[in-house]
Image 1 (cartoon, one colour):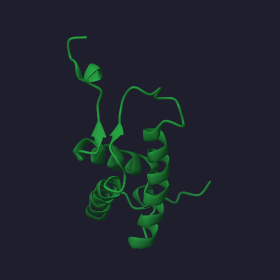
Image 2 (cartoon, rainbow, N blue to C red; image 1 turned 90 degrees about the vertical axis):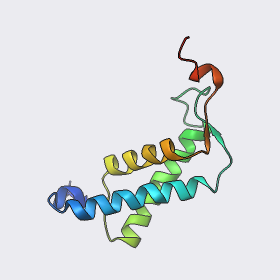
Image 3 (cartoon, one colour; image 1 turned 30 degrees about the vertical axis):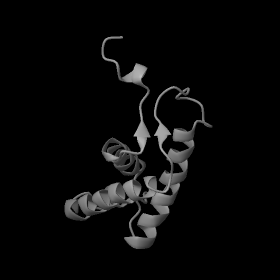
Image 4 (cartoon, one colour; image 1 turned 180 degrees about the vertical axis):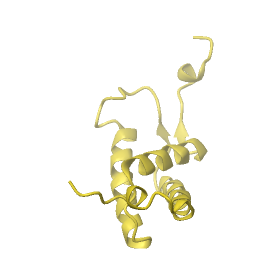
Length: 105
């Protein structure tokens, strides 16, 4: 298996890695705007057909293609995953069930 991720090939180019990761986070937030509000909890987290899981799979694949096209950069799966969940945390498109948000349960 050949090493293809830019982070692994050139780990010292931290400025470029950070720029790509910040752009990926912006990319995800912009893509979330294309979708209606999505409930984070309530569905089985292992259900591949749950809306959040389907969205994750689709956007991760599109983001990898975007990076290769825009930056000529192959992001690692960890970079994609972290950027996705940082964007989820910043976005107002994801809803939590009131029961799941209750710290006293």
